[in-house]
Length: 113
Image (cartoon, rainbow, N blue to C red; front, side, top):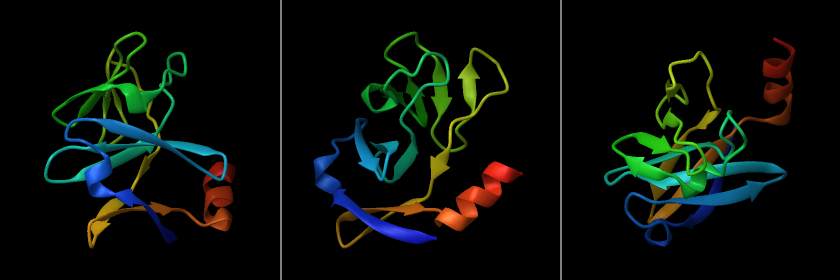
């Protein structure tokens, strides 16, 4: 896996998200206060842009139809269905938000499973 430099932490305001396109993969990164979280940037309901969600605790509320998504696990919490969005490890180094993406080979293995 590789870590990518995304942006200065100050560029993502508290309780807000920002979208980033990394090689065709859309990812939403959220500032949760003492930490950051990242998930795929598409609500499983109708593809709403999760980066534009209302953030409540560790939950993103999709701006289109109000689906609640846990930013820690990617699980859809409301409505209660067994669907998840992809999550990504995030860390801050020297004030820079870093995102970890799986290697292409590892991603292909996950898709095949």
